[in-house]
Every structure is written in C-alpha cells, then in structure tokens.
Image (cartoon, rainbow, N blue to C red; front, side, top):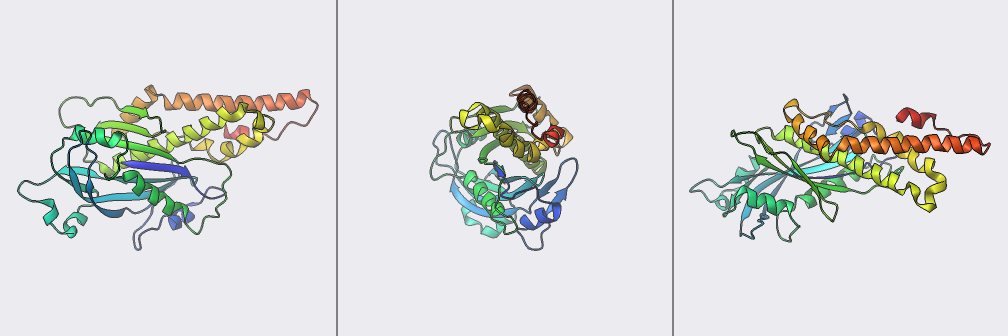
Length: 318
C-alpha cells in the first residue's frame, strides 16, 4: 500500500457536505463520513486494472495481473490523503492468470495474481527498496488519486501555509497463526520516503487500510510541524515568528489524534510506533516549542513597551 498526503487546497477546513462533494468520485456510490472523535471522509474505492512486473528484490521475472484499489480521504476537513493498495496472491495451480478475462479479475478488486516465482519476503523487499522502472508503481496511482481530490471545483485553491506532499509505503505480511508477530519496522530513506513493515492478519483489509492512512496522516503532521519549528531561527523569518506559526496552530494542531479511527485489535501497531520512533514524544516537543515562542513574543512586547500580539486564540489551540 502507498499513501500520499498533503494540505487540502482550500483556505479553511471543509464541512462534511463539502467533503462528500469533493470525494464523490463514483456515481451512485456513497462517501463514508464520521465526525467523532475526528472528522473523516472516505471516497468509494476506484479500481484500476494492471498487468506489470512485480518488484522482486532478487530481480526475478515475476509478473502480476489484477487490480489496484484507490481512494481519497479527508481528515479534519484539512488533510487530503490518497491511498492505493493491492494484495498479491499466488496463482491458482493449473490455471494461467493471463488466460482469464478481465471480468474475473475485476470481480476481485484489490488483488494481483502472481505469475512466476517469488516469495513474500522477496516481493516485500523489492517493494520497500529503491524504485525501479517498469514495475508496479502504487505511488504513481496514489498520486493521481490525490491530484483528483485537489482538482475538485469546490475548492478555492487558497492555502494558508506551504506544505509538501509526503510518501508513505506499507508492506503487510500475513502474520499467520504461529506465534507473536514481529515488531513493526519503520524507516525513512534519503529521499524522505517513509516505509512501515507490519506482520498482521490479512483478512481485515479495510481495518488495515484505515490504520495505514491514519499513520500516514499523522506522519505528515509531524513532518510539516517539525519543518515549521526548525525554520523559526532562520534570520529572514525571525521577526515574524508568530505570523509564521499562526496558520499551522489554527488549522493543524488540533488534528493530532493517533489511533482515532484504528480498530482495537490493531492498536498494538500504534503502541509500537509510540515506543520507537516515538511519534507523540516528538509531537509534544513541537507543541512545547510553539508554546514557548508564544510566551516569548508576549514578554518581548511587554519589555519593549508595545502591545503584546494577539495570541489568545493560538493559546487555546495549544
């Protein structure tokens, strides 16, 4: 699974009705929405047929034929996310996947039938390794889906702060019935691509997709806010720190709610990430830095005999 995340191309958070309009990709298919504990809207799945090489780390000539499912997600009316996912299944004995019509593959959305030899570990290492031309590219599919969300005509195209898209890859191995699953493995490569490898039961595809989207959204929040506070000491913006912080505090800070939509049986994944790399510890450090900046801005103004900047609303956000 791949997820791409960014700030919705709109001047303020959208309400549930507008979120449904933005994500209404498929006629007669409903957009799922929830408002508690955090607003979340999910588009219907779109299905894309693919026939391509699979990313074998060993360089084996392994192909896949089937479909990839994608969807758009809006979180808190502010975060725009798109994800693309598929399950790679071994081909049926005695039946060649290429000989079956596409209607057979379309009847099983989100499943790629493997053609050729490659084990799960080989394919997972290939997927999480460096990108290779000519192989399955879930990132490109997710990116197109996110472009579709951002191109909605109901959006005004105004954004209160500059943000970048993040890319998050998820490789989920079937845990099977034997013994406890290994701890999740989280890495960030030199290009800034995040990768999480998890061992879990594959019979809960929807719950796993929601978990991965939740993690990707919170990783994006961490990334954006960390870059913001890291840039506060740069001379060009030193004099206008509050103005630089304000949009993020007003529109993003309250969206931090890890595991808000994660099923209880998958909460152990979040617990592992809180241990290492420590998402919430990093977030607490960011919030403390912003709070200190607001306090210092008031003290500086008072010492200079000026009127303190209006930080009441920002303080409430902290």
